[in-house]
Length: 339
Ligand code: PMV
Image 1 (cartoon, rainbow, N blue to C red):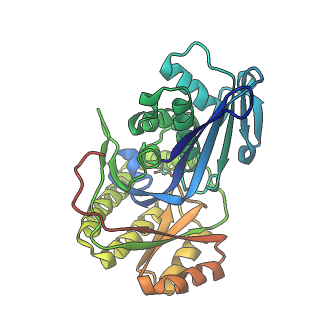
Image 2: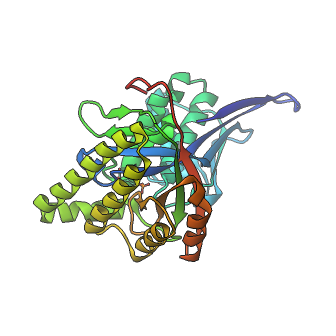
């Protein structure tokens, strides 16, 4: 996550401004099953970012501006579940500040909303980081705090988030993640050979809360079947980590295909996602799957270096609204097992 602070002395009154950004994310393996304690793998999407700018204001109160969310309100008039207001109040509570100074907080985002790319978590993380730095609360701007506070906000919007989104956007590193008590397992991992991934958008929005809630209802109705599906996804994520570490790109692709099949059985794919997955595979992708909550949003395709253009073209022909390229690149030596 990036940030900068600027103090302007050009006007008679010093106005200081702090900017912080946070990335989007993709889930490579294990969405949905991760909510039920199975491992998952996710990575930041550095080229799509949310940005928060916090400025001192000469007018009283805290003005919240988020054009993408249609927000231009004063904090004290905002509804309890207003996404940006909730973040500011959360930070105020965590810092035990009885009062905040007069501020303007402006939020912008390049990450499409409700599309499985973690836009909500990224906006929250950017606002927390910018505001904490601006107020001199440097301990609350640490990755740990940004992740924990973002998780609290995710709970308001998503009900039962696993914690993987806030972790990836706050630390901005690929992670192997297991939701567990008393503390989640968060492990970085080595990448043996580069993985070139395309991220394609169906253009259809999807509510993570609704899809996660529906999976929960299906799990309650048929626990044995859904436990088996979740266990399958967990096994795949575990094997995928090993394949990524040893640089077995073909095996990573096969495991993506297997994961997509289990997600179809959970009924979280869609005609559009399946269409893009099939088009990517037919054009030479080594593997393809939906990414995130599903029933819309984005899919990912693993492509051989020389096949990127052909697969990107096929995805566009099959109706993708946008196609991005991202990569997991080799890391060496193997990092320690804590972020
Ligand atoms: O759709 P997104 O980007 O919010 O990803 C959701 C991932 C889930 O595993 C479905 C839910 C979660 O909290 O992990």
